[in-house]
Amino acid sequence: MIGSIIDGIILGCIITLGGLGISYIVLLQNYFNFTGGTFFTLGAYIAYTFLAIIPMGSLPFFSFGPGLIVSLLISMALMALIMTVIDKILYQPLRDRNSPFMFFYLTAFGMLFVLRSIIYLIWGPQLKNYISGVRENLHFGGINISPDEIFVVIATIIIVAIVYYFQYHTKLGKAMLATANNPRLAEISGIKNKHIHTTVTIIAGILTATGGVFYGLAIQLRPIMGFTLLMAMFFAVVTGGDGAILGTFGAGLIIGITQEFGTKVLQILFDNVGLQIEMSGYKQVIAFLLLIIILTTKPKGIFQGTILER
Amino acid sequence: MSSNETIKTPLLEAKNITAGYGFVDVLFDVNIKLYKGEFIVIIGPNGAGKTTLMRTISGVINPNKGNIIHNGKNITGLKPSEILTKGISYVPQEGNIFTDLSVIDNLEMGAYIYEGDYEERLDMVFSLFPILKERKNQKAGNLSGGQRQMLAISRGVMVNPKILMLDEPTSGLQPSLVTEVLHSIVKLKKEEELTIIMVAQTEKAIPEADRGYLMRSGEIVLEENTDTLLESEQISQLYFGG
Image (cartoon, rainbow over all chains, first blue to last red; front, side, top):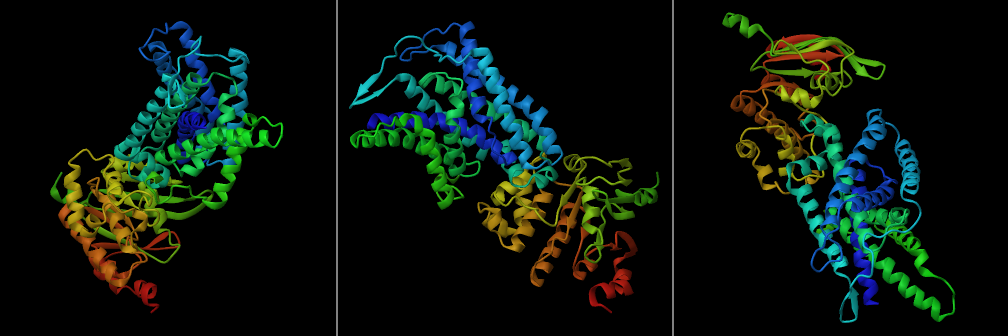
């Protein structure tokens, strides 16, 4: 049981990173980018490709080496570039024409299928791993956790802290919030909206790639890995509050733990009553049900008025 | 160039401006001039086109005809952020503060492109409106109407502009606050050596200005110094129905 909570925390960290990538787009452009999950997958596969070229090397304590860190950095840069190019070609013209939000959703939906096809075409449907062989787990108090998973959790906390500092304590971060709040006044104040949109897309690309690589590190690479987490990412974004960094992190952890712990509890329950249901296939349903409950009871987010509001 | 000629060269000029929204024109062949150090008011009934004129000068909308000239240079078609770099700061009537940001962050955004001493500008604004210092960490959306207008004006001057454009800064305020805000604007003009163009709803603003324009149905129908303007029959009709 405690093990499933730990698994939930790790998954929650990964959901947070993917969710923050989507959250930035929601904050500035006010629509949910369905492609977010597929960008997440693409980021993971790009790192996988570079890892075939760059020697992995070794690091004490971890099963991965500096090669993965370098591949992650390359993936971050490429995802920032890819997402910026897609934004400029597809979404900037829609923004310039003040197009209805339906156009944004349709474009994002279409891109999801295009990118997914590209991923299948290049990397195929097989499962892949960054690290071959069995990983050593640490055992304490009945908990099994690998050093790589500890790395994912600590790195996520550091990334969330950096993003939080950037957003609320730097001029550019505040300009992003100002543009999200009142784009016309921001432009009148000398903030160039197009630059802000580009900055936001770059940050979203970096966070999305990191989330994807962390998923690949903690679990494995699958062509639909981002898509299966999309509902959980939406949950983190919606219930965390509009553009709230800590809120998204808190909500990410909640949905991660609920998915892992909840499926475990329900599995035991169903097994005891003799129902033959494999609950691991229904994690997205749990995320969706929880999202509906929150949307109907706390539509402005679960952390409003708390320290996690920002 | 003689000093007399210098005085006669407008700092800002709207020449033959025709502008509007979509295919509908709201302004028709409007001409106004603003000289350095002047304080001019633009008055007129609702729908006269005052706000559209301010939006056109500030680059929020592009004119369909005519030019905006600043210091002898054509600045027509520049974006609002580019107009600001010319030292022209615009405070719109609505949506003039970042409601989700704190008071201090609003002021920081006002000084976004300012390269001088930010703390000095902050001190200037806080000495003009001490209440903003008391409320500096408060969310701007939670301020009262008067405080919002003070913040909006402050945001506009944080960039240390040469020309301040105010669109109905006293709109919706109680009479005592109208006087307070107007006195602050006059104080700002003197201390900051500002040139001001202000759209005003209240006749109280007229005596504070040097000159005024009366707009009606998208056209300038009267241009006078404020003393003459106050005695004009058209102004009496506008404010007192007489």
